[in-house]
Image 1: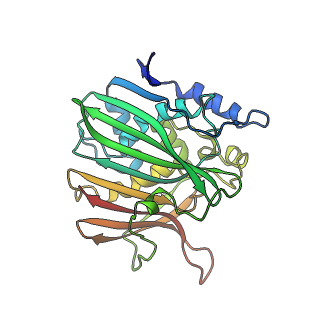
Image 2: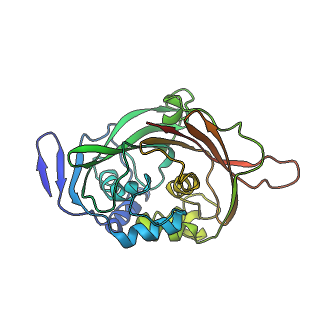
Image 3: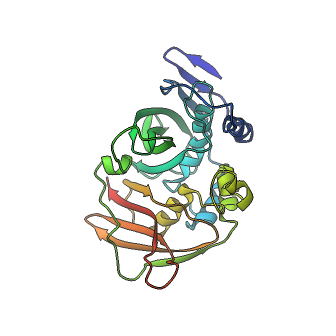
Length: 302
Protein backbone atom coordinates (compact mmCIF):
# COMPACT_ATOMS: atom_id res chain seq x y z
CA UNK A 1 0.00 0.00 0.00
CA UNK A 2 1.36 3.40 -1.03
CA UNK A 3 0.11 6.79 0.10
CA UNK A 4 0.53 9.74 -2.26
CA UNK A 5 -0.08 13.44 -1.67
CA UNK A 6 -3.70 14.48 -1.83
CA UNK A 7 -4.85 11.43 0.21
CA UNK A 8 -4.60 9.05 -2.76
CA UNK A 9 -3.88 5.59 -1.39
CA UNK A 10 -2.62 3.00 -3.87
CA UNK A 11 -3.40 -0.59 -2.94
CA UNK A 12 -1.29 -3.47 -4.21
CA UNK A 13 -3.87 -6.13 -3.30
CA UNK A 14 -7.59 -6.49 -2.69
CA UNK A 15 -8.59 -5.57 0.89
CA UNK A 16 -9.63 -8.57 3.00
CA UNK A 17 -13.40 -8.38 3.47
CA UNK A 18 -13.46 -10.86 6.34
CA UNK A 19 -11.30 -8.58 8.46
CA UNK A 20 -13.16 -5.49 7.32
CA UNK A 21 -16.55 -6.95 8.29
CA UNK A 22 -15.09 -7.81 11.68
CA UNK A 23 -14.05 -4.18 12.06
CA UNK A 24 -17.47 -3.07 10.79
CA UNK A 25 -19.26 -5.27 13.36
CA UNK A 26 -17.15 -3.77 16.13
CA UNK A 27 -17.97 -0.27 14.90
CA UNK A 28 -21.69 -1.05 15.13
CA UNK A 29 -21.50 -1.88 18.86
CA UNK A 30 -22.58 0.68 21.49
CA UNK A 31 -19.66 2.77 22.62
CA UNK A 32 -17.83 2.45 19.32
CA UNK A 33 -19.86 5.05 17.41
CA UNK A 34 -18.23 7.56 15.10
CA UNK A 35 -18.33 11.23 15.96
CA UNK A 36 -17.09 12.91 12.78
CA UNK A 37 -19.20 15.16 10.60
CA UNK A 38 -17.23 15.14 7.35
CA UNK A 39 -16.38 12.52 4.76
CA UNK A 40 -12.66 11.75 4.47
CA UNK A 41 -11.01 12.96 1.26
CA UNK A 42 -9.16 9.64 0.88
CA UNK A 43 -9.25 8.05 -2.56
CA UNK A 44 -8.31 4.38 -2.92
CA UNK A 45 -6.78 3.11 -6.16
CA UNK A 46 -6.04 -0.50 -7.06
CA UNK A 47 -4.20 -1.32 -10.29
CA UNK A 48 -3.78 -4.52 -12.27
CA UNK A 49 -7.13 -6.00 -11.22
CA UNK A 50 -7.78 -9.31 -12.97
CA UNK A 51 -11.15 -10.99 -13.38
CA UNK A 52 -11.53 -14.37 -11.68
CA UNK A 53 -13.35 -16.43 -14.33
CA UNK A 54 -14.75 -18.88 -11.77
CA UNK A 55 -16.09 -16.04 -9.67
CA UNK A 56 -17.63 -14.43 -12.76
CA UNK A 57 -19.33 -17.70 -13.76
CA UNK A 58 -20.68 -18.21 -10.24
CA UNK A 59 -21.91 -14.60 -10.14
CA UNK A 60 -23.66 -15.04 -13.49
CA UNK A 61 -25.46 -18.13 -12.23
CA UNK A 62 -26.56 -16.61 -8.93
CA UNK A 63 -27.85 -13.44 -10.62
CA UNK A 64 -29.42 -15.05 -13.69
CA UNK A 65 -27.00 -13.88 -16.41
CA UNK A 66 -25.85 -15.99 -19.32
CA UNK A 67 -22.29 -17.32 -19.12
CA UNK A 68 -20.21 -15.08 -21.40
CA UNK A 69 -16.77 -13.46 -21.54
CA UNK A 70 -18.25 -10.01 -20.92
CA UNK A 71 -18.90 -8.56 -17.50
CA UNK A 72 -22.46 -7.65 -16.53
CA UNK A 73 -22.35 -3.96 -15.66
CA UNK A 74 -23.19 -4.86 -12.06
CA UNK A 75 -20.15 -7.18 -11.71
CA UNK A 76 -17.45 -4.49 -11.26
CA UNK A 77 -19.39 -3.37 -8.18
CA UNK A 78 -18.24 -6.48 -6.33
CA UNK A 79 -14.65 -5.76 -7.41
CA UNK A 80 -14.89 -2.23 -6.02
CA UNK A 81 -16.80 -3.18 -2.88
CA UNK A 82 -13.71 -4.22 -0.84
CA UNK A 83 -12.26 -0.75 -1.49
CA UNK A 84 -15.54 0.83 -0.43
CA UNK A 85 -15.58 -1.27 2.73
CA UNK A 86 -12.01 -0.29 3.53
CA UNK A 87 -12.94 3.38 3.34
CA UNK A 88 -16.19 2.97 5.30
CA UNK A 89 -14.41 1.11 8.12
CA UNK A 90 -11.60 3.66 8.37
CA UNK A 91 -11.61 5.43 11.76
CA UNK A 92 -11.94 8.76 9.92
CA UNK A 93 -15.24 7.71 8.31
CA UNK A 94 -18.12 9.41 10.17
CA UNK A 95 -20.63 6.52 10.15
CA UNK A 96 -20.49 2.80 11.02
CA UNK A 97 -20.75 0.69 7.86
CA UNK A 98 -23.22 -1.83 9.26
CA UNK A 99 -26.56 -0.10 9.60
CA UNK A 100 -26.22 2.09 6.53
CA UNK A 101 -29.25 1.93 4.22
CA UNK A 102 -28.63 1.55 0.49
CA UNK A 103 -31.01 4.10 -1.09
CA UNK A 104 -30.08 4.13 -4.77
CA UNK A 105 -27.53 3.07 -7.33
CA UNK A 106 -26.51 4.41 -10.71
CA UNK A 107 -24.17 2.38 -12.93
CA UNK A 108 -22.91 3.53 -16.32
CA UNK A 109 -20.70 1.65 -18.75
CA UNK A 110 -19.26 3.32 -21.84
CA UNK A 111 -18.61 -0.01 -23.58
CA UNK A 112 -18.67 -3.73 -22.82
CA UNK A 113 -15.84 -4.90 -20.54
CA UNK A 114 -14.16 -8.18 -21.41
CA UNK A 115 -13.22 -10.74 -18.78
CA UNK A 116 -9.65 -10.76 -20.11
CA UNK A 117 -9.08 -7.04 -19.45
CA UNK A 118 -7.01 -5.75 -16.56
CA UNK A 119 -8.66 -2.91 -14.71
CA UNK A 120 -7.76 -0.02 -12.47
CA UNK A 121 -10.28 0.62 -9.71
CA UNK A 122 -10.66 3.87 -7.82
CA UNK A 123 -13.21 4.89 -5.19
CA UNK A 124 -14.04 7.84 -2.98
CA UNK A 125 -16.94 9.24 -0.94
CA UNK A 126 -18.67 12.54 -1.66
CA UNK A 127 -21.93 14.46 -1.46
CA UNK A 128 -22.70 14.49 2.26
CA UNK A 129 -26.16 16.06 2.40
CA UNK A 130 -29.36 16.08 4.46
CA UNK A 131 -32.18 13.56 4.22
CA UNK A 132 -35.54 13.57 5.97
CA UNK A 133 -34.50 10.45 7.92
CA UNK A 134 -30.87 11.35 8.58
CA UNK A 135 -27.87 12.03 6.36
CA UNK A 136 -26.98 10.62 2.95
CA UNK A 137 -23.81 10.40 0.90
CA UNK A 138 -22.44 8.79 -2.26
CA UNK A 139 -19.73 6.18 -2.71
CA UNK A 140 -18.30 6.71 -6.20
CA UNK A 141 -16.41 3.88 -7.90
CA UNK A 142 -14.78 3.81 -11.33
CA UNK A 143 -13.11 1.15 -13.44
CA UNK A 144 -10.51 2.14 -16.04
CA UNK A 145 -9.14 0.06 -18.92
CA UNK A 146 -6.16 1.27 -20.93
CA UNK A 147 -6.40 4.62 -19.14
CA UNK A 148 -10.06 5.14 -20.08
CA UNK A 149 -12.97 5.25 -17.64
CA UNK A 150 -15.28 2.48 -18.87
CA UNK A 151 -17.54 2.06 -15.84
CA UNK A 152 -18.85 4.34 -13.09
CA UNK A 153 -20.95 3.39 -10.07
CA UNK A 154 -22.61 5.85 -7.68
CA UNK A 155 -24.03 4.12 -4.60
CA UNK A 156 -26.14 6.35 -2.36
CA UNK A 157 -26.35 5.46 1.34
CA UNK A 158 -28.40 6.77 4.25
CA UNK A 159 -27.23 7.07 7.84
CA UNK A 160 -30.47 7.02 9.83
CA UNK A 161 -30.84 9.22 12.86
CA UNK A 162 -33.12 12.22 13.02
CA UNK A 163 -34.18 14.52 10.23
CA UNK A 164 -31.41 16.68 8.82
CA UNK A 165 -33.31 18.24 5.96
CA UNK A 166 -36.40 18.23 3.74
CA UNK A 167 -37.83 15.12 2.16
CA UNK A 168 -35.65 13.68 -0.59
CA UNK A 169 -36.01 10.54 -2.67
CA UNK A 170 -32.30 9.83 -2.98
CA UNK A 171 -29.76 10.43 -5.70
CA UNK A 172 -31.85 8.85 -8.44
CA UNK A 173 -34.69 11.30 -7.90
CA UNK A 174 -32.27 14.20 -7.75
CA UNK A 175 -30.96 13.18 -11.17
CA UNK A 176 -34.49 13.17 -12.56
CA UNK A 177 -34.77 9.44 -13.26
CA UNK A 178 -38.25 8.50 -14.49
CA UNK A 179 -40.47 6.84 -11.93
CA UNK A 180 -41.55 3.25 -12.47
CA UNK A 181 -44.12 3.21 -9.66
CA UNK A 182 -47.00 3.47 -12.14
CA UNK A 183 -46.11 0.35 -14.12
CA UNK A 184 -49.02 -2.06 -14.30
CA UNK A 185 -50.39 -4.90 -16.33
CA UNK A 186 -49.21 -8.47 -16.10
CA UNK A 187 -45.73 -9.06 -14.69
CA UNK A 188 -42.99 -9.78 -17.22
CA UNK A 189 -41.40 -12.30 -14.86
CA UNK A 190 -41.97 -13.81 -11.43
CA UNK A 191 -39.22 -15.26 -9.26
CA UNK A 192 -39.31 -17.35 -6.12
CA UNK A 193 -36.39 -16.43 -3.86
CA UNK A 194 -35.17 -18.99 -1.37
CA UNK A 195 -34.10 -18.23 2.17
CA UNK A 196 -30.48 -18.80 1.09
CA UNK A 197 -30.53 -16.08 -1.60
CA UNK A 198 -28.51 -13.69 0.56
CA UNK A 199 -25.96 -16.35 1.48
CA UNK A 200 -25.53 -17.43 -2.15
CA UNK A 201 -24.91 -13.85 -3.27
CA UNK A 202 -22.57 -13.27 -0.33
CA UNK A 203 -20.45 -16.23 -1.45
CA UNK A 204 -19.90 -14.79 -4.94
CA UNK A 205 -19.71 -11.12 -3.96
CA UNK A 206 -17.90 -11.22 -0.63
CA UNK A 207 -20.61 -9.02 0.93
CA UNK A 208 -21.27 -10.96 4.15
CA UNK A 209 -23.25 -8.23 5.87
CA UNK A 210 -25.17 -10.11 8.60
CA UNK A 211 -28.51 -8.56 7.60
CA UNK A 212 -28.41 -10.72 4.44
CA UNK A 213 -27.40 -14.08 5.90
CA UNK A 214 -29.72 -15.59 8.51
CA UNK A 215 -32.91 -14.57 10.35
CA UNK A 216 -31.04 -14.45 13.66
CA UNK A 217 -28.24 -12.18 12.41
CA UNK A 218 -30.76 -9.98 10.58
CA UNK A 219 -32.87 -9.56 13.73
CA UNK A 220 -29.86 -8.13 15.52
CA UNK A 221 -30.19 -5.15 13.18
CA UNK A 222 -33.96 -4.77 13.24
CA UNK A 223 -35.12 -7.04 10.40
CA UNK A 224 -37.63 -9.87 10.91
CA UNK A 225 -35.78 -12.10 8.44
CA UNK A 226 -32.68 -11.94 6.28
CA UNK A 227 -33.06 -9.52 3.38
CA UNK A 228 -31.82 -9.77 -0.20
CA UNK A 229 -28.84 -7.63 -1.21
CA UNK A 230 -29.88 -4.56 -3.14
CA UNK A 231 -27.17 -5.24 -5.70
CA UNK A 232 -28.45 -8.79 -6.19
CA UNK A 233 -31.91 -7.34 -6.91
CA UNK A 234 -30.39 -4.87 -9.36
CA UNK A 235 -28.41 -7.60 -11.12
CA UNK A 236 -31.41 -9.93 -11.31
CA UNK A 237 -33.50 -7.20 -12.93
CA UNK A 238 -30.68 -6.31 -15.34
CA UNK A 239 -30.31 -9.96 -16.37
CA UNK A 240 -33.92 -9.93 -17.55
CA UNK A 241 -32.98 -7.37 -20.24
CA UNK A 242 -29.86 -9.24 -21.38
CA UNK A 243 -29.64 -9.36 -25.17
CA UNK A 244 -31.57 -6.09 -25.51
CA UNK A 245 -28.99 -3.75 -23.98
CA UNK A 246 -26.86 -1.35 -26.06
CA UNK A 247 -23.06 -1.37 -25.72
CA UNK A 248 -23.18 1.82 -23.59
CA UNK A 249 -25.98 2.31 -21.09
CA UNK A 250 -26.92 3.44 -17.58
CA UNK A 251 -29.01 1.54 -15.08
CA UNK A 252 -30.48 3.74 -12.38
CA UNK A 253 -32.30 2.12 -9.44
CA UNK A 254 -34.01 3.22 -6.24
CA UNK A 255 -34.45 0.75 -3.41
CA UNK A 256 -37.87 1.06 -1.82
CA UNK A 257 -38.51 -1.65 0.77
CA UNK A 258 -36.27 -4.61 1.62
CA UNK A 259 -37.06 -8.09 0.31
CA UNK A 260 -37.54 -10.36 3.32
CA UNK A 261 -36.40 -13.88 2.44
CA UNK A 262 -37.86 -16.23 1.36
CA UNK A 263 -40.09 -14.27 -1.00
CA UNK A 264 -41.91 -14.22 -4.30
CA UNK A 265 -41.29 -11.12 -6.43
CA UNK A 266 -42.66 -9.92 -9.76
CA UNK A 267 -40.89 -7.81 -12.37
CA UNK A 268 -42.85 -5.24 -14.37
CA UNK A 269 -41.30 -3.48 -17.35
CA UNK A 270 -42.03 -1.32 -20.36
CA UNK A 271 -40.05 0.37 -23.11
CA UNK A 272 -39.13 3.99 -22.48
CA UNK A 273 -37.55 5.74 -25.46
CA UNK A 274 -34.34 3.86 -26.24
CA UNK A 275 -34.41 2.07 -22.88
CA UNK A 276 -36.72 0.61 -20.27
CA UNK A 277 -38.52 1.32 -17.04
CA UNK A 278 -38.95 -1.48 -14.54
CA UNK A 279 -40.23 -2.25 -11.06
CA UNK A 280 -39.71 -5.21 -8.77
CA UNK A 281 -42.54 -5.85 -6.34
CA UNK A 282 -43.35 -8.43 -3.71
CA UNK A 283 -46.51 -10.51 -3.55
CA UNK A 284 -49.40 -8.78 -1.82
CA UNK A 285 -50.48 -10.18 1.52
CA UNK A 286 -54.23 -10.54 1.81
CA UNK A 287 -57.11 -9.86 -0.55
CA UNK A 288 -57.28 -6.36 -1.93
CA UNK A 289 -53.81 -5.37 -0.73
CA UNK A 290 -51.34 -3.81 -3.14
CA UNK A 291 -47.98 -5.34 -3.93
CA UNK A 292 -44.94 -4.28 -1.91
CA UNK A 293 -42.53 -2.04 -3.89
CA UNK A 294 -38.92 -3.21 -3.67
CA UNK A 295 -36.97 -1.72 -6.59
CA UNK A 296 -37.78 0.89 -9.23
CA UNK A 297 -35.45 1.76 -12.04
CA UNK A 298 -34.62 2.80 -15.56
CA UNK A 299 -32.17 1.68 -18.20
CA UNK A 300 -31.12 4.33 -20.72
CA UNK A 301 -28.79 4.18 -23.70
CA UNK A 302 -25.57 6.14 -23.82
